[in-house]
Image (cartoon, rainbow, N blue to C red; front, side, top):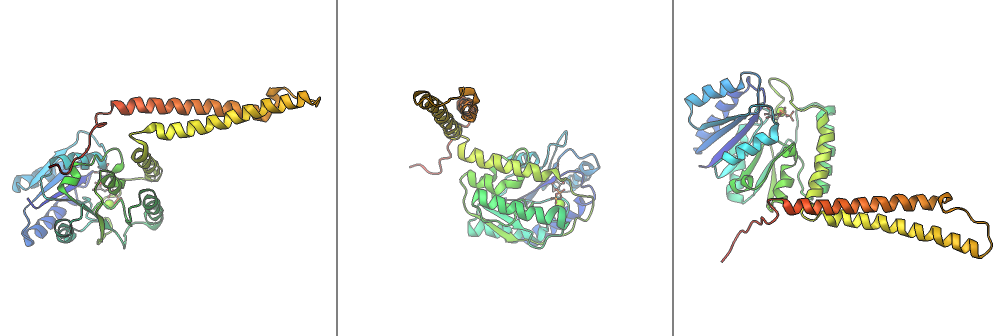
Length: 316
Ligand code: UDP
Ligand code: MG
């Protein structure tokens, strides 16, 4: 099969039929063999009924329905487990992404050897203040942290080699950073394509303002996990030792100053009256705690089922 189209959706009953008809037209015109995988992420409207009806008429449709609204990332994850097309294309259900981009995305993965091609909504039809500006800032941060030169990390329209989606785990809210997950999984040929974007036709956006805070925290987690996920002690141990060292120096300084003053007949203070004493105390406690954090991290990471999982690409 050439293409699997994956569509996560949450309460998008109005747009589904139109989207389906459009995708089908593009597929037939280009003679692609394809499947469309809808994931109904716990919709409370008639989305599932619409999908079931479409499925009765078209066996190229497959669909999963969640018991509850788990989120876009779990929806993508479950669809990725099922897909069998050579090229996997994800697309939002709200008609903001255009199915007309499919042939070119397919070509880039198939013939130019890209592992992932991410859409770039260069001309974006969302509100300036709540989407466009914050998203510029986010993309700049994500570029810096990951070193991947993309303009638009969180575009819903993306194309993947089948192998890539089977080797990434999109969880929590990590769909925003799929290119980073892909890179961390060892796939480096990541490209982008300018795509047409439309204003939302029906309903409204499913993500509120809290996505900025969460998005930022997730980025920190990703960058931490990638660097230290398998060796937490290298992070906690370093900072723990540094803190402890500062504390130790402060203790020595406090003691040395007191002994010096005593020997030279100067007036001297109690150790607890010196500010350095408190710096020493705090630093040594913090250092020990960080060290403990490191040991616990190592214990946990030794228990991870993936601790000895390495993807071997060739063997002779
Ligand atoms: N979506 C989902 N589960 C959720 C939230 C959103 O499957 O919990 C789907 C939604 O139906 C749409 C896509 O993810 O197909 C993108 O969502 P939306 O258009 O609301 O995001 P925006 O374009 O505003 O960033
Ligand atoms: Mg949208």
